[in-house]
Amino acid sequence: MEAPPPLLLPFLLLLLLLASNMATAAGDGCSAGCDLALGSYYVTKNTNITYIAQLFGFTDYRLLAKYNPGLPNLDDVAAAGYRVDVPFPCECLARPSDPASTYLAASIPYKVVTGETYASIANNYINLTTADWLQATNTYPPNNIPDDATVNVTVNCSCGDARISTDYGLFRTFPLRDWDTLASVAATRDLSSPEQMDIVRRYNPGMDGATGSGIVYIPAKGDRKTITIYGVF
Ligand SMILES: *[C@@H]1O[C@H](CO)[C@@H](O)[C@H](O)[C@H]1NC(C)=O
Ligand SMILES: *[C@@H]1O[C@H](CO)[C@@H](O)[C@H](O)[C@H]1NC(C)=O
Ligand SMILES: *[C@@H]1O[C@H](CO)[C@@H](O)[C@H](O)[C@H]1NC(C)=O
Ligand SMILES: *[C@@H]1O[C@H](CO)[C@@H](O)[C@H](O)[C@H]1NC(C)=O
Image 1 (tube, protein in one colour):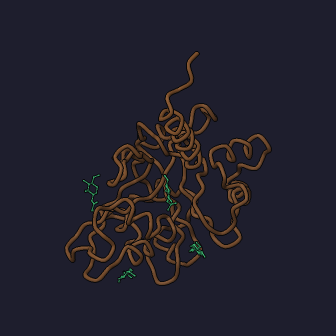
Image 2 (image 1 turned 90 degrees about the vertical axis):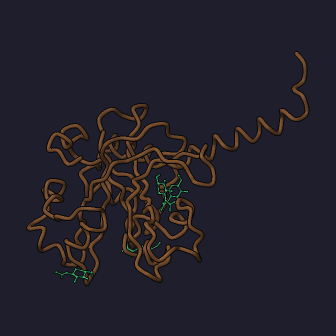
């Protein structure tokens, strides 16, 4: 067998490197998305459910009720500390700077108000996205967002992975807060057996040691199909 031509070797190494990077985020290198994923929105002070619903494109907050069967009256969640599940389609998108680089995310149109920045926009979404990620997924340069622009608010999501388990079809994008860890969040969602924890870890490569920052994907009860029958999209 002949040795590979000199240029081929660096190329192969590059491919390997790209492949190992892809393994680090759930949806990287996707080719398809799914109809539904959820975002876990942590309710802070001075907000209300109407405002939260609007951030995700819902004119009527009552549409969120079926995704939050465990919450008391939705009108009362303005109390800080609740988490509201917000539904969105999870699409396979590409970076504007590199169409070959795909990822799974919701892309929520956001009408900017004069003077807003990627940081101020990201702030409204309480760690479901970041200023850097908005900059990477929108074409406007950070210091030049037009006054009347619509920015895509990009929230990473997961559609699961049949190679890991076919038991779960619906996933919640969950920003870790304060002392939250992957295991503590899974436990509060009734996923605490060793078998379930093993699956949750495999959906979240690299996040096992994280505390208080970053996003994890937690299987949600009910599967995608059952929930879409109620008909939102
Ligand atoms: C809801 O919150 C938004 C943003 O904080 C605020 O502008 C609006 O007045 C509030 N609406 C009600 C009914 O409290
Ligand atoms: C979303 O996922 C991409 C990788 O696909 C990652 O680079 C980015 O930091 C993630 N954004 C957030 C807010 O976690
Ligand atoms: C928002 O996303 C749409 C569809 O993916 C794209 O055509 C548009 O250019 C994006 N907007 C910005 C500001 O990047
Ligand atoms: C948002 O994330 C930062 C760390 O990245 C953390 O300090 C802060 O508490 C988080 N806020 C909420 C409301 O989750």
